[in-house]
Image 1 (tube, rainbow, N blue to C red):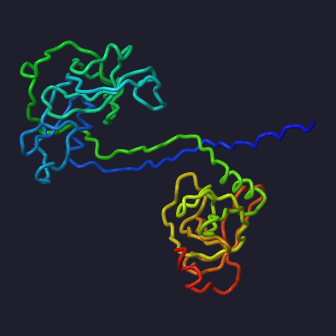
Image 2 (cartoon, rainbow, N blue to C red):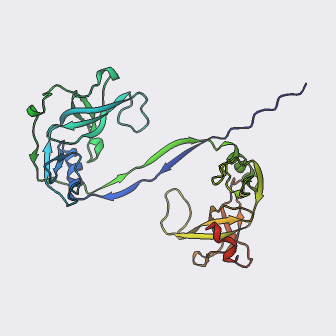
Image 3 (cartoon, rainbow, N blue to C red):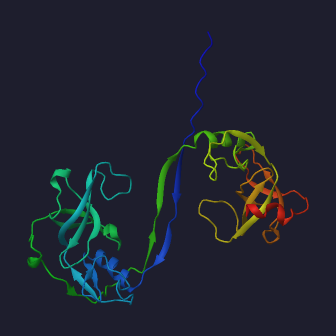
Length: 324
C-alpha cells in the first residue's frame, strides 16, 4: 500500500493597496469641513433652489460655480439604511451599526454616515436622528462621530429650514489628506503558485495556450483570447527586450529606490506577454525601446530585483512590436 500524496501548499499573503494623497480645498469644501469642526453643518443652494448637503462646488444643472452657503440642522430623517453586522477596522463604530442616508432638516439631499443602533429592528426608514459630534474635532467628516436616534417632528413642514451663512470661520481648513486603502488576502491559485515557486529557483515559467499557442508570463491559468485552460508550462527568458518604459520622478513611500529610475515592460524571450520590471545598471536617460536586458537577483530574493543591459545589440522593432 502506498502513502497518499500530500496536497500542494496553498499560498496566501496579506496585501495592502494604499494611495493617500493631499488635496487642496476650494471655498465651499473648506467652509463645510471647518464648519463641522465648529459643530455647524453647511449646505449649498443650487440654481433650482435645492439645498445640497454635503455641498458641491458646481451646480449640477447649469455647471456654474456656486457659493451660496446655508446652515442646516443637526437633526434629520433616515431615507434608507443597511445593517452592518461586522464592522471593519477604521469604520466609524467598532460595534454593529447601520449605514444610513440622512436628509438633515433644511436639506434636500441626504448624507451618508453611521447610525449607532443596538440591532436592525431598531432602525427604520423615516426615523428621526441627530448628529453625535466627536469629542475632538479637526475639520473632517469624522467630526461627525455618527448619528443617533432622536425625537422630533416627522413632518418636514415642522422641521427647521436652512438659513444663509457666510462660511467664514477663524483658522479655516484649507487642505486634507485623503486616505484610500484596501487590505485583503491574496491566494494566487494553481498557475501563479507554480510561477512563484519557479521564481524562488530563479526560473521564469509561463503557460502555453493549446489553441493559439501563445505563452503567458505571468500565467493566468487560462488563455484570455481563447478562453481555454493553459496547463503546458514553458520556461522563458531569462533575457528579454524592453518594449516600452516610463521614467519615475516621484519617490514612493516605503520604497528605497532613488529617483529618477525606469520602470519598463519587458518581453522575456519565448513569452507572448510583457511583464513589469525596473531597469538598472544604466543611466535612466539611456534606456530605450528594444534594449536587451537580463534579471539581477539579490541574495534570498524571490523575484528579480531589477533588469540590466545584456550588452547585446538592440532588438529589431518588428520582433517586439506586437508586444507593446
